[in-house]
Length: 356
Ligand code: BGC
Image (cartoon, rainbow, N blue to C red):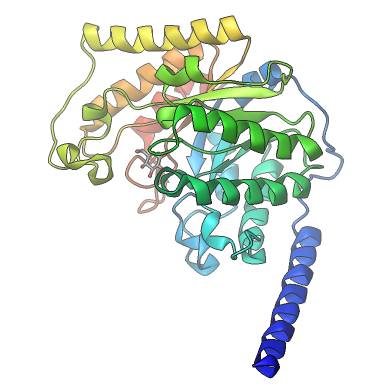
């Protein structure tokens, strides 16, 4: 069947030319560096201090498949900045935009770039977080290839972007991605990133869902001082994930769990002290990349927990990002539209909001 194969080859060549041209176009159109703001190295500690408080955003938005259906729009970053947040963690599920060779569809960048530009233009620090963690947990071999392909394309593309753009290698390794395998994955992706971004700050977290308990198992290249270490905090799960079907059958019908006894507050303090002890011993700044309580919990309880976790992070000098902007944990309510004031006040106390 040589004739058919030839036609298929030609089709493939045409497809590749079209996709290369589209990638080039989106590279030009989607330039992200604000005029006059070239990349300049910044200490990881200084960057984490500047990151302050932030919010996770755009992960599960229908706008990824159909921009006209987007819930979050680039204009939201101005509201986020005006409310007192300094950082956004943009959640990327990129693998489904890849072809068989791992090449990202230009559509992915066509969606991402206007958001990235708007967030940087709003003065925010932007973390680009690869969030295909569940696919990785189920099939690490295929994930490893895709993750490397992702950073091979992302790192050179944004190498000139301002230092307020920070990469996060991957969210919450778990399942078949053991702590040991994760250390290898971190090393291989960091090497890819460092080839074009030798001094950009990169967020890396421990295994087991970015658990603070796995911090001692995290292996980082000692000489790389441009790393910010992340962990996620949803303790106690029975409180933060009551009613959360994805967390496991035992959470589905849980309701009415409260939080805030002295014993529970001590667990929080001890946990965060353990992170601080690790950070001081290893000379790494810390970013609490996710924390939040799902909406079936009573609002006053959610506020109490959110305020306590935010304060525990701030007291130890950790940057933080709330999970998440909209949805079941949301600090933004699209039905208003507007802020969920009690959650916003727990994150950005009104007295701090008033500060310049
Ligand atoms: C996941 C979300 C989930 C949240 C809290 C995030 O890392 O991507 O799907 O809602 O954690 O469980």
